[in-house]
Each structure stands twice: as C-alpha cells, then as structure tokens.
Image (cartoon, rainbow over all chains, first blue to last red; front, side, top):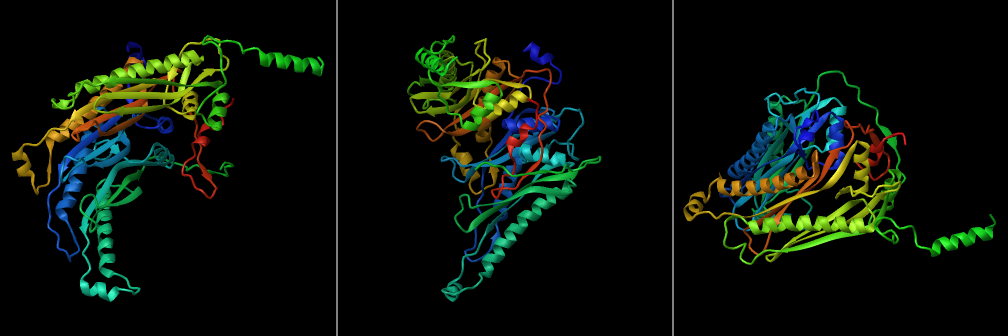
Length: 255
Length: 278
C-alpha cells in the first residue's frame, strides 16, 4: 500500500461502475474517478383519493416520488462531497419494490464521483459537485464542445386520468374521434413534469438541458394513474474559446 | 529443398507433439472469443490458449437465514470463501493450460438456502513472445477492453468481489399503523439496506486493496432476493482491479466520428483505438 500512496495524484484506491471505455474517456478529459457513490431511501407512499371521472394531479404522490428521489440524490451528493469530488457522472436513478413492503419503494441513486486532475474546481454555482446522468462517452463529447454539466435536473408528476363516461364511450364506439379528455390529461401531465425540470435548470442558471428523457410508469397504482418523470442534465458553456472539432464521417464495413 | 522434402518435413512436424510449455502438452486452442477479439489480441502480442474454469460450492448451515436479524454472517463468509476458492481453481486451470492470464471471465453466482456457488469461466491467454510464464491476471473484461487498457498504460490484476446478505428488519405494529396513508421515509429499512450495500462494496474494495490495485473499474452491483425467505436480500459487487503500469496515464486520443450506416450507432468504440503507431 505504501508504494501506492506515494504515487503522485493517487490517493487510495478508486472504485467505479464505469466501463473501461468510459473510464478511459473520463481520464481523457482530465478527470480521475474517486469512487462509486450512492444514496438510497425507502419511502412509504401516502394515499390519495382519486375521483373516477376526474383528471387531476395527485399532488401527494407527486410529492412523495419527488422527495424520495431527492433524498437519495442528496445522500449520493453527500458521499461525493466527502470524497472531495467535483462531480458525479453516470448517475442512475432506480426504484425497487420489495415483496414485504406494501406501498413502499426503495429509491436509489448511484454514480461515479470524479475530480479534475488539473486542480480546477468544476463544482456548480451552489458549491456542490455537479451530477449528470450522461455516460462517459456523452460526457467526453460534451466537454469537447465547450460545455460543463451543472446538475441532474428532474421533474415529476403523478396524474390520474379520468375514465370515460358511459355517454362518451357509446358516442365514440365504432367511430374515428379524438378523445379530448385523454389527450388533454396526458398533455398536461407531461407539461407539468417538463416545466418542473426546467425550473430546476433555471435555478442552476443553466444554458440548456441535454439528454432529456421522459419516463412514464404506472408503478403500483393501476392503469389510470401514471407517473411522468422527466430527467436531463443541465449544462452551461464553459469559459474560454472552444472550437468544436469537425467529426469524421465513416462508413463501417461490418454487419 | 525439394517439394518432396518439404512435404515430408511438414508431415513429421504434424506427427510429433508440439513443444511443451511449462503447463505440459498443448492441445488445440479453445476459446469463447470472437474473431475480432482474437485478431485484436494478436495485434497486441497475445494469443488465446484454452477455455478454463473454476467452480466452488460452499454450504451455508441450515437455519442461518432464520434466526438472525441484520446481516447473515454465514452466507457472507461462504461467499468470500467460494470466491477465493473459485479464483484459485481458475488460476490453476489456467496455469495447467500454459496461460498467463484469463480474459472475459463470466461470473456466475448462485445462492440457495443451503449453499453459495460461484462459477468462473474464461479464456486463458499468454504472450506470444513468452519466455516468462508467470501468472499475471484474471479479469472479466473483454479482449477489447484489455487491449484498450493496455494502450492507456493500465493493467488488469484480478476480479474483486464482495457480498453481503441482509434480513430486512420488520416494522413494529405501532410504526406500521402510524405510517398508513402517510408520505414518510422508513429510516430503519433505508439504513439496513444502505449499510448492506455499503458492506458489499467495502468487501470488494478490500479485495482490490489486497491485490494492490489502483482502482476497480466496471463495478457491477447485483441485488435481489436470496434464499427462500422474501426478507433476505443479497448484494453482490464485482469489478476488475486495475493498476497503472506506466509512469503516467497514456492518452488514447479518441476521434469523433459520424457513422453513415443506416443503423446509427451513437458511439463506436473501435474508432477509439485511434491511429497509434504500431
């Protein structure tokens, strides 16, 4: 061990769930992995009554889904801060359900804490390590184009979509018609989730959000209650001039 | 030399066994590498030797899962024992085949209420210009990853693994009642599972430190139900210990490419190999 500790730039041993490609690309942009970090929270979700025929946001469930994820991410952040990291890359957010827990779910956030080798600080404007769900490859490309990640931003909305009334079902039977209440409900729920994500990005003074994903899941609530989760990495232009390298076009001859 | 002599010589060469290495007679090469990987290995000065394996089963005493709370120590130590034993067998199997390293190791972990079984299988490889036959590494990395690491100045050492088995604590009736219909975190469950995960990773780290690794890459955290009880959860962390072989990290100089094929791949790692002078 003594031999390892003496080596410049190496303090202890790192662990990382990055693949070899990702690891080498992270090194390529001047970062060194510090350790695999994680946070979790097992959360009991409250009950909210839904009206059969009303489309509405279930704010109590939205709150629960948001807060539980936030708790997990904060704990991951705390681990990264303790390691002295500049950021966390390759963040994954998972939800586990266990057979022994009715109405409970485990929210997990994992990622690899990284630190810049040139000693510059890449922490975001709140002084916290940046988080990003970009892969090592995406991270490399992002840095090549003169951007830095600021944080993983998310917005969520649990929405109950009204069932159709009897009259409406009968009228629509056998015809080509739009179902405006479904359209409206799904649109609004998505919009709410995205807007909340954008608000988080604005708070970080981001110039944009990349890699946005919109996930729709019913979890354990039945078909008419859906969680819309939108996730992305808020980015900002880094200081200094950057010329974006011209990518080479290739035609691969395999397969 | 006439054609006749040449043919005769070839036939004699075929008839006589190939030169023995330290591992004894060499059979034909068996490997689960793809052609690409084989070529890549050859270009890096390595060749596959044989398909090797190591298997170890450890028993877990009956009742270990039932009458405890918190961590199931017997299962955790059975895992550690099985992992060490399987790695040792893999190494011996590799040395017998005349290899000096094992690549692309598949790791199978099976846990039942009576035993923990670990199965490792991979392709033994050796340097083509080998005059030394010292055992060098075991790794679950692919041949491509191995060559990339090598270019960047890193070297795999071995498989680092750690596991922890935990029984999820129960909530008291009062806790259960007070939480009905509420949005609340369950702190004791959160903590129990968090600690179990942390312990699995710590054990993996310790096995990395033991092999004098600079780091562990490609860590995979597997979790799920173990044994017949739904409350027992297993966490297994597995990765490859790596070490910087050169004085400093070598750049692999990646290039940005846009593939013009119809089937768009977002990122092609083959192009990462760049144009390093051979």
